[in-house]
Length: 129
Image (tube, rainbow, N blue to C red; front, side, top):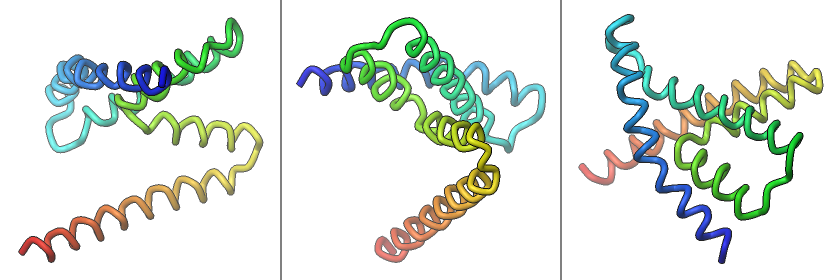
């Protein structure tokens, strides 16, 4: 039950994170123009940075309780972006020297997600029309 509360409490951070990313997105649009999802790139990059920094800090300094782990990694970062998990998986596969497996992971994750999005979108349009 404590872990569930920690995840929910961390999830409250999502709207705040999105709110504070909006000015960054506007800055990119002013510099480079509209039409590119700068906000999502910013969220994914900052979430991945935070995950990398925190996972190493926790590993080196102190092992957090299950509740703190759930609050920070599942609640806060998980509500902010799930891309950090993809980034961490990629890093650890590359760290093991498995470049071909890393490339396969990038391709399959991206391709399958795009296909799944397309199928879901088309199916919804078919059902709703």
